[in-house]
Image 1 (cartoon, helix red, strand yellow):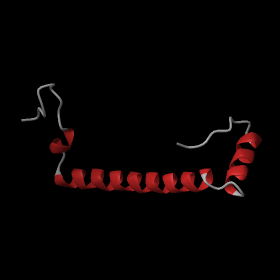
Image 2: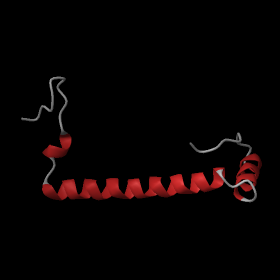
Image 3: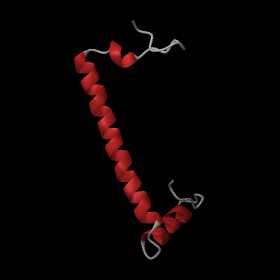
Image 4: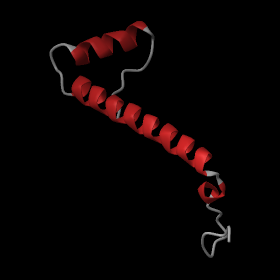
Length: 71
């Protein structure tokens, strides 16, 4: 049935048609790619003490935002 486990959770992906499931998987894939790229950019900014990190701090200051690093 629709119930996934003893807690009553429903696996809504199983309720999707094949086409809807493919669309969902494609959207998830795109989000994952963006997150990987963002992680790589954040890593380069955090580990660049000469150019990128000071530029990041300056940009935040100009925008009157707190100086933070992406996790």
